[in-house]
Length: 339
Image 1 (cartoon, rainbow, N blue to C red):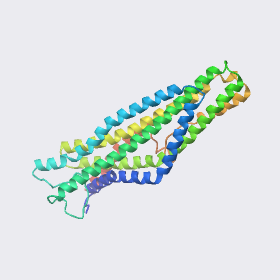
Image 2: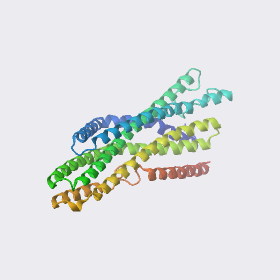
Image 3: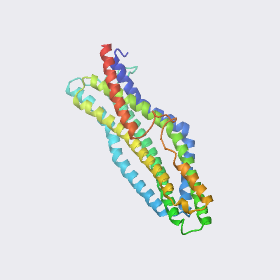
Image 4: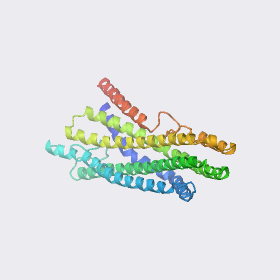
């Protein structure tokens, strides 16, 4: 049984670590058909862009290939850290026990078993299962991160294409007739409408992931960091935990930074529409441009359930760091009171 407050916090931190892959598995089980439809709609939007008469298709292809190469390089580099961090987090525990001549006295993860996990053979099997479980869970989370990072970077490419194409259309206002401009503006509006519907579906799919991210990461970082500060483990064990938490926090930062880039490109799109020489076209085309500006000028916030406390941007990331420090200090005071 868990006898004191510190043990309960340590067990809660471990529970949050092992529950993350389970929640992601449930998420993909429930949402896999919607994700499939979303990817099909994204492919359809890409085909429309490549077959459109608005131009800038070559730049779209180049940007797409550039993002694909960056994602490939990023995945290979971060995968190394994600793979080794759980191992480096677990390995010091038996090594320190051997050094202190207390081998099999502790496990890396604070879990309660219905059997004696300190017996020869059973300890080693339990240790390996904990390490593999932690590794598989971290890999699943990393795969989910890469998946949604790629999706949001692709949405950013769509915004860049729409900005470049409307910029080209603005240059044609003086050269082409009103009917030609109207035809191209109508095609642009259809592309933009397809993009908005696709992005709205992405936010709907992303909402549960944001909730999983914040609930899981807050519990993991706060409880594990507090438990480490309260424990008598050595420096090596502490460095293993800090490296494990740092990788998870870095993954959250990548999500926030990517979403910030998307928001900036959304603002640039509205600016490009406003910069077009709308005063040189007829009333019909002015009405189309006005509609385009209204559609593009809406602020883009990537949140869960439209809640300002469940956002993913750099501002929210800094708030998360500040909240984590506050929470750790609060748990420290609570522990002192219990003792």
